[in-house]
Length: 238
Length: 365
Ligand SMILES: Nc1ncnc2c1ncn2[C@@H]1O[C@H](COP(=O)(O)OP(=O)(O)OP(=O)(O)O)[C@@H](O)[C@H]1O
Ligand SMILES: [Mg+2]
Image 1 (cartoon, rainbow over the protein chains, first blue to last red):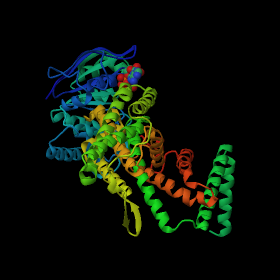
Image 2 (image 1 turned 60 degrees about the vertical axis):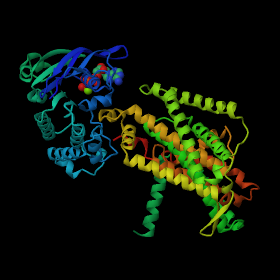
Image 3 (image 1 turned 135 degrees about the horizontal axis):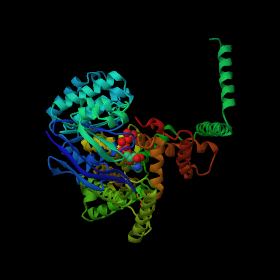
């Protein structure tokens, strides 16, 4: 189990800072939720961790090792996988090919086959869709493939960017249960959600991101009952 | 349905189309009709004239397949780079030219040692290897200079840079090698012909077509079976998603340029063997042919580039005898390029996605 530690992260698009000196920790083997409004900088944080965005300042450590200088593909090798916002499947490849390419950095063929089986147990629906083009699947099915593809890298830290966006309530349940199941296998999870209530419910730790800054943090329960979170993100009167 | 009902339905649809269409649609329809009439008229005239026998046509077709496979090899480089970067590599034709000259120098030294005729099975692969290696190296250099610096910005700069590099290569070669036509020395054994299934085929055509098939099969194997091929497919669909599964995107792009350049080098060598003359200007006109073949097949589509090359080659080889002869033109073969470029224009107008291509809108998953 590995800890992801982000210190004073600043990311800018041209002159605009999207993330300003954000610090947080995704503790080993725990689920850490990130809550924030549209444009708060959640995706930017995840992409900085994955190496898709250059950072202006700050450190990204995994178990004390600075990974901030690695190119994106080496961070996957280092154990960080991301389920990106909007799923971003390879639509002209089959479900099987999407899962297989998720294991691009791995050499352990036998274990890869086993992991595919495990993903098909986690998401039985994908078994029926196995040879179908990923681009032709429903949104929920695509989300399952996206999570399966990320898991195929055998990560120790999994970043999820709004995995329940646009999904029907039963599918939301299924996706979040899968997140918990993955976490129960020892994977450190950093979960970005618009659906703050559901995210905080399953989170051990959580923090709030507002216009690029971490403004609140605590356990999932603490934030669930925090008046500012209740009024701004849970739709309750303060 | 009765005949009357059918004709009423047809009349309805025609009227419908007429109401909803604008003058551009009418112009396009008129062009289609004119082209169709010209082609049919030419075909009828050509066949009625009976200048050529079936055996003539068969050997034209064989020549068309040969030059078509050269176009296909060039087209693949355009289509692969387009697939992965959504940009045209305007210097690609000159990569082929440089590869062709690399083959010339390899052939010269091997011929000096007497190997080209005494040990053709060693010499020919070496000449091809020289073309491939230099083509790949020049193509990778083009990526480095014109495309890599702009990988993360949306800009036309790479295209401008590539056009600049095209001139650099062309005029550099002109300064170094001069403008006269050159031929590969020492391939005397290629002078003859062979009889295949009753056809008399010049040896260079057999060699070139065979070599092209081997290279194309090798390419398909790389793309379908190797991790590199999977990485190429992934990067061309979604660069960021590819990086997120651990694919080294820049390295994949470099390899794409290298493979495209290697195939252009092969094309340059095969062209030299078939036509027995190369010049420093060949990159321009053959580059456009390869580009036309890529568009014809559907740019971004590997199978399309292969098919487009062969179709273009066949059209050029058969078209003059089959179509233009029917108009009683004095020198129909001089007009083969009109057919080639004419097809490019017609495809761009009527089927911009090409023979096997998809509409761009349908591309994103
Ligand atoms: N490529 C970009 N270029 C310029 N600005 C950007 C870019 N991507 C994001 N931004 C800006 O950075 C800020 C943070 O964006 P980000 O996508 O990280 O927000 P988010 O919290 O993920 O929002 P959402 O909930 O809508 O996904 C926003 O103001 C956005 O407009
Ligand atoms: Mg976002």
